[in-house]
Image (cartoon, rainbow, N blue to C red; front, side, top):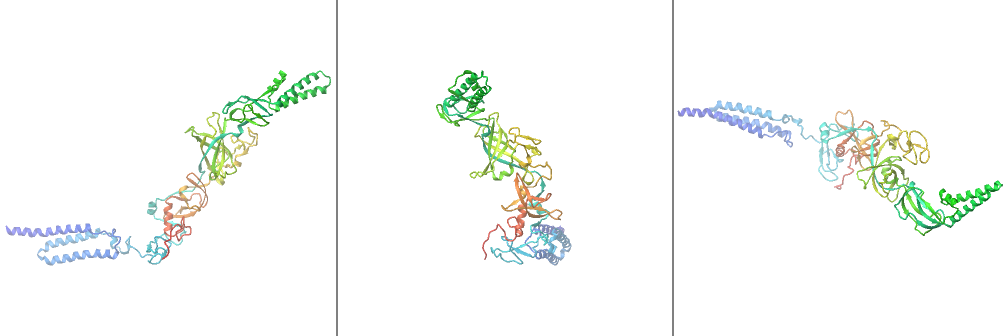
Length: 556
């Protein structure tokens, strides 16, 4: 029984040893370092590590054969497992471990050494930067960095382009729309102001309108005036009428005509001194003079000023009242110099007021001041607004918007004015053919003479436009990066362009680009930074080499 137990123990020992060997091999494979993650090991160290492990295992295998000859059968099984484990470990190793110089992360001998702070410093070997003293670092030379490239050109891989999130759009021809915001206030329409003055010297006996703000109509009585001159003129008229009556029975035709002429002259004198035809007729009918003469309003509107008092003596031309017709008002806006290129006579203006929030009023530009205000550095823009409902009050503050579409050569595109004729004094008068203004009688002028484009909405009449994010601005220059068509890898070239005005989210391009060019609108700063690192011409450093915006630590 004892012999049988010993025999079973001997038979089970090789199997246990084999199991332990397999467990050890598995643990060794799990903790063995992956060559792809060991970025700092050299190829020689990796090769030595790869060769030492099988040798040690074989050495151990030979020792185990010498120490346990009685267990040859079990050892043979263990040896087979050991060789199997070794083969498995060799299969788990990365092929790059035995690839020699083909290791993707292997540090190649640097052809160029540069300073990370001053990329224009380049040396053939390691050393220190002559400016800041920092250790030079090796610069990896991209396969695409060839001598036939343009100075501002850079080539990226597809993965680099994706990581930099580069996006491009084509340069196109279209009419960009600019939104101009202006502020101003409501004022009186100067063409609708009327002044009530004394036409003859006299004394104001009765102020029939004795406070401002009164609404009057044309022909309403305003003031009663005593004037000795008017009294004499009335007496002259009555005497002329009596003389004409006496001479009407005369047989001398010349005397009758002379008397009639005297009467007409007396009537004209009173009319020119402000008396109406009805007043003159009343004097002739009554045959009596009137000590007081009533002055009537020459226009309808609101009395905005009263310049005289009752009992006051006035001379010829003295202003007594000022009447303003508020059925139409002006809106005076202040435009900055940069806004003038978008403003034209006859444009439609939308504005809002504090009194009516959310409600928009509409007017038409009727005048742009040719002189800049030296105090405010602005130009006055006048807008004609209809106000028959009377809601707009003078001195109200307004916020206005003007939407303008820019065409080529600085003209403004307005489809409603193409081929039209406009009054130079009243922009609301627009006709399809030449003629005269219905208000002032002036000859109409073509809309093109006022700064509007004559062409229709065609492709040729529109300017070149790029998104505002495509331009890198330095204050004096503008740089745009353009994708090279037909390149094997994503390639971008920087171009200096001349930009026109900005319209919303777009810039007008005067020169430097062509229609259809693919400009970078996202990631262009990253492209420019990559060119700076390579000491190539960039946005802030058009000549390349030294960084234009960098700092100097001083030479050592």
